[in-house]
Length: 153
Length: 153
Length: 153
Image 1 (tube, rainbow over the protein chains, first blue to last red):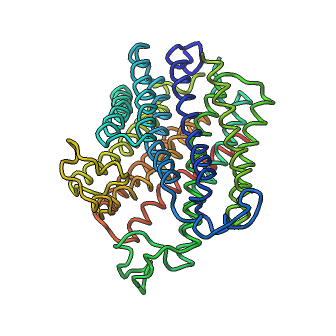
Image 2: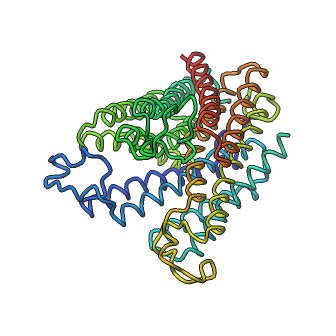
Image 3: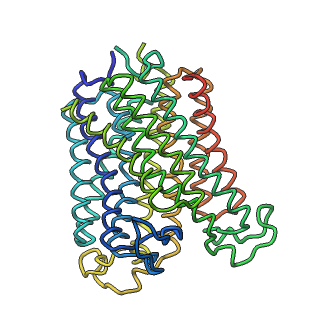
């Protein structure tokens, strides 16, 4: 039987969760761009100080870190520590044929935890809230990885 | 029908694009190694100052950032913000059965934009060129993710 | 024939290797959390200095880099430079139907090199040992990517 098609509802659930997470990840890059435009700074490369349409008025302090740009970069790094792992483990999870209910719960848990983590990080919520949401997403990935390992061994 | 085999020309196109992007990503790591050898510095770990075959003449300034090493690291971080997302979304795109023409255009767009971005970044081209190439690659991923979402929902 | 099921021993070998690498990657995030708790510092966000259950005694120096926390973060960044690439290339490798023996050797080489790299990095072994283990893992990924490219072209 072919598991990796939209005819398999577990795969369809994975495809939706994965597409949302990929959009989230790419969107964070654009958020960094937006924050750099807003700050007119937070650049990282010496050549970014060349005069041009994107920077009509270059100044050395544009290479200094900007709080909002750095926050967006930290959020993206945080995403990169778990979203690629989720994308891979979710596909493996489809391959080991879990129940549709379990798959939906774990996929939704990861996606919602990550979106809530983004909202909490962007609005500088307290460490406890961020850590809780990070943990929920991380545990969803770990549960799927252990499940795959037990089924494959 | 099994979509994930080389008998499916959309999958074959994905496999070629993905393999090139994986080689690009791994190659950037080796570029960082090369730049560290050339600079005889740009190291990040205190233990890298131990005398040994790789470092016969250790000096504290080897832990200072080196411009070329840091550039290669930024290029790799930039890759990591989009190549893993492309690898995942490309596979999902294969699964939702796009036309071969559309798949080839989007895969080629991402690969060429990323290779051109690498060339522009390595040679310190202006911010506008780098931003344009980043945007093209990012939009290719976003288009595929939205297409997957619409097909799967 | 469907390649991406546990009935295919090459896929089963990939699933085991991938699940171990995903657990390694997620585990490194928890190692960073553990090192932050141990150091009571190494934080990155201004809001982490708010008083709360996770930080009953906030002090500005908690935002200074801590050697063990930074080491764990460098280890995670190092993982992120190769584990997502391995997860993607391993799946492509399954799709091009290598011999079971070759697949097992390459998957095991990557996994063992990466686990040994982690042990070497965590215990601050010399640059040469770390570089050797990094190279072995990187070459395993590169070999698989080139193999996929030749089969798909």
